[in-house]
Amino acid sequence: MFSTITGLVLAFQEAGGGEGGGEEESSTFLVTPDVGLMLWTILAFTAALFVLRKYAFPPIVEALDKRQRAIEESIDTAASTKAEADELLAEYRERLKEARVQAEEIVSRARTAGQATEKEAAAAGQAKREELLEQARKDIQAETARAIGEIRSEVANLTVAATEKVTRKTLTAEDQKRLVEEALSELDFTALSGGRNN
Image 1 (spheres, rainbow, N blue to C red):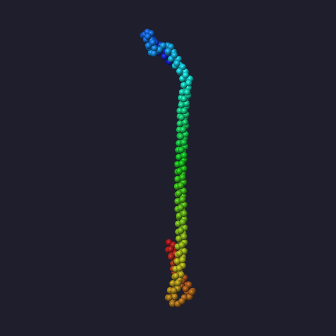
Image 2: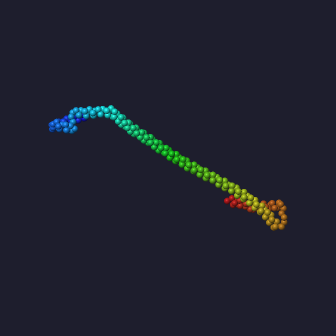
Image 3: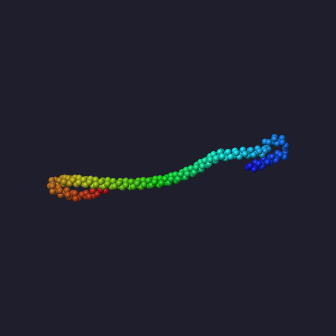
């Protein structure tokens, strides 16, 4: 850079030196600087560069380094946060899958328990029905036996009364017993009992 600036200055000097005299040289001083001014300019630039390099650039570089570190930390944090989020998402999906499996198991168990309860209720209902039918049969048999007893008693009384009317005499106890047994043997009470059962 220094050589480029020096080359430009020399080119301007040669161009200015070939054209004019002393008066023009003082009037074009601003356009064609001399070597002394050039050296002072370079010296001032170098001093300013040294001061900037010593005092201004380190804080700027440090601030840029801090900014770069902060950005890198933000990127690292974002990456770790994304990794954690992915891990949590995977864990959530796994738990959701387990919850679905458990829900299906609960529904299956409830369905099985419902079917078992339904079978138990049906069996209990059937047993109660059989019990009621058996009780009804016993009641019918008892009522039939009572009715047959009443009918026998009534037939015996009617037989004795009819016999007395026909023979016009009073029968002895032995004759009454014999007539009742004959009359009862002629009646078919088993058919009557069987018809009631059916």
